[in-house]
Image (tube, rainbow, N blue to C red; front, side):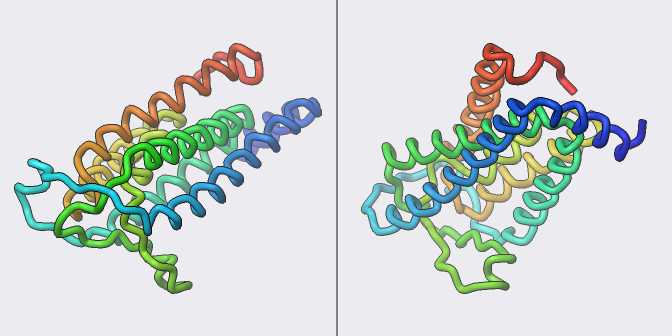
Length: 218
């Protein structure tokens, strides 16, 4: 079957169950709510004093502005992954719940570990937000890296081998990019990998245990 046929077939089967539709709606809503809450939270912590430390990795080089490269790979990865996951409604449920849990983990970590930005930081500016508005660029939403954890989560969610090749490149570019720009400490990036894996694996375990999704790795 081609892409369109797979989408039609899988979604027609999926929407036969009102329970499926309800759970998908809840998963999407949970992500929207968490995005709203974390947006408010990181705005508030911008005025909270934190602490900085000497990162031996960051001390090895001068920062480079890679904002456009980072956000290019980030946005293309999100769009690319969504197109693939759209074929499988159950995978969308897993994706939404996993990302909501990841945002919850990140909010908790930022609350427990207030950090000041690294020395010589080059602000990580979203080109789209910069173009359409004048939102203040935040500097204290550090532990752990949200950009890195998101692309790692996408890599875990998407099982297609060709897609994973691109997503693995995105993980490398984004993780290395935020370090070269000194937008994050090394620990922020390393923990992002672990947080993404935990969010994915724990969410998948719970959803499978309650038979919300099956055990297939599509």
